[in-house]
Length: 367
Ligand code: MG
Image 1 (tube, protein in one colour):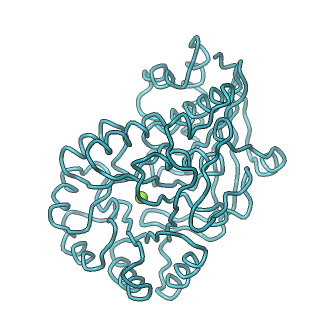
Image 2 (spheres, protein in one colour; image 1 turned 90 degrees about the vertical axis):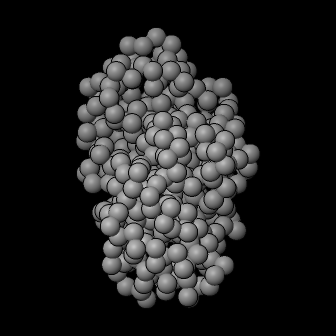
């Protein structure tokens, strides 16, 4: 396959409600989309970077620059590019996993569309719909939190995840557990907000029967997580720490986690995500698919990944309406707490040109 041009688009999608984690708050999603124009057709991908480097080190204008100056010229110069070769072609550039992942995904989408094969088939999906959960941001008021959780449960979500931080942890978890009872599938996500010295505070969460506690410590603190995992009865899950299959292997070897949240964009794409899935399966460690406020393009591919066998916990994929009033693809909807896995060629979803053009704030074509 020959890459003829790469189109980068910045689109602006207002969020239905502001979303706050321990690290940052946002009231709109400014997304970076990548479209590869190849000798065999087009392929699309979502590069779910944020405008600033506050959640991940990569950020929107940095990703645009590294693609335009380095990654895209390297891909265009390479003969016979396939998705399986993208990482090798781009290997001379250090880091920039999310930008590389977006290019690999766009090439994979083009390749699979040309072969009339879906992401789900290609990745080895075993389900045609997946149970999904919802991530509830820090609200600052227990009444508001309870009301939001009630609303999501009425919509049918199968699992609730609460964002926590020091000072907003024990009380909100207790309040939700007391209000909705012991059978609610409930977990908490700290987004790296704690230090090892706060282990005693995190231990207080053990009494609430959480499915897991996600990423309490810094992303590079695998040993700290291994020590913490010994102290807690709540399973420790890693998210921000998991940046590649190699790091995932180290985390498992060290006992730093007993559950893994796989974010395809952060680990370098869907091929690396599948490799981490396989590694965790071989170790008996369950995985689930996290979310990075993806547009419909990224959501579709995540649904395919979440349909693999060892994705045994509901992901943060959520229906489109949880985030956006309007998306650049047809919306994904909940049916009995599940979302159908797209079965059409490639990601199985189509970008709506009229909406895309209306929401686009910047467009560049690299040749
Ligand atoms: Mg997380």
